[in-house]
Length: 315
Image (cartoon, rainbow, N blue to C red; front, side, top):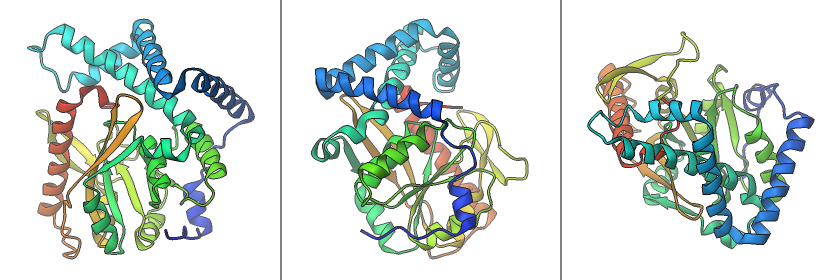
């Protein structure tokens, strides 16, 4: 396992924006972790999973505004011919799956190593390892399907050096849990977080240091009009997807893969890798190649959204 690379001041600023976990947030997260830890000791991991699904079901019944938003998200997959009971079922499953993911994310550092290892599977791991063996890093094109933050921690646990591009407006729970993860496993590679809107130099450095960089191009709103985008077809609609990280990956000769994070019953998680989507040695960044890669990315999203409609998190 390689040691994490040291960061320059500019890279540290990109990885650690000024928004920090407040004392109140830390107390709130710690209280919830204490409560979940007590439940874990009383009912075990399996019992906690079923309780989490129950909590998610209650949220589905109570939170009608979010229920409407989730239904709207899933409308990109289901047409009017789909029975309402089927659509209601998948909306409810979305609530329960997401609640389970949040609970697991808050307590998984409390699990024994052997138990934690049994919660995670890498599908097509040979593709990932072959890509990393080239030494130029891997760009994992993620999407708003599944809970990628859970997989990031688990891949760190497996010894992979992982980084991700996130929105600076997201909640501080990820920063809080990363600090707890670093306390529990100081010898594991730390996760490096970058945030949209920063200079791209840290991304070049991460590929040079053979990191796996994950980011989602399928955003529902472009954060900055100066960001380069490309049109794709998804479920019959023309959408604009972000292009920047893909361009940097091609210029760095990093392998370009696509990944999907999938949840299974009992707090089981797997990440599936597809690709490579480009020839990393060609350096081709022609408009035709970029359009082809991004459309393949969109087509794969459509395929997985149809297979796992409860995993859709944003659109």
